[in-house]
Length: 81
Ligand SMILES: [Zn+2]
Image (tube, rainbow, N blue to C red):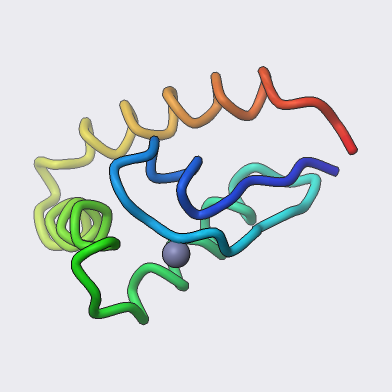
């Protein structure tokens, strides 16, 4: 099982200390995504904006792919707990 904080998932561009853990990278990313979408504070704005654009714009798929490639790297670096 790997554990990430909201901050780590946001690459320290904001976020909070809420923790997301699991064995499935997509599920952990998804859980954090759902959490981010429920926020309204400026700390989560960078990720909220990113998610809003990638969801609304099919051309932003590439951005999303890039993000997942980045997160996969972080995921692989992370030690199993
Ligand atoms: Zn958060």
